[in-house]
Image 1 (cartoon, rainbow, N blue to C red):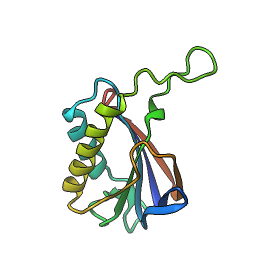
Image 2 (tube, one colour):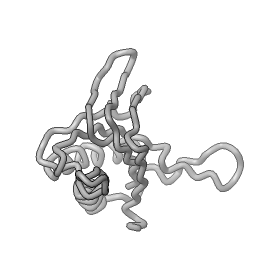
Image 3 (cartoon, one colour):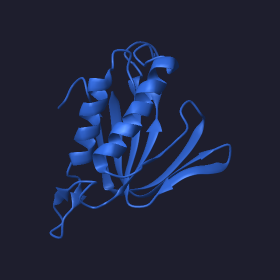
Length: 150
């Protein structure tokens, strides 16, 4: 699983010109599911994100997690995170999981992430054409891949 995490002051998702989810201070997370991802990837990534210290303490140091600040999460599925661009000019998405597999792991990830931070999260609509807006705080943007674990 691959995630792009953005620390945000606010974020929202629209589908068909309708606001379906919005948050204030917290994280906007784009997540892409790969063909060989499993529940172990879901658990590892949820834990990693929940405990990641990317919010500032009173001294301005990144020492606080989303749990510490009681922040919110907006989760958006994005298969294009697995684009392969090595050859040609059209990205290949052969490593992205097919929707029938990806939707199940996406649902498990929503549950696991919500349970790990101890509160409900907001989310986009799987497979929809979404319009995502945010005010990036910092800016802080972090990329995590459960297969690389850097």
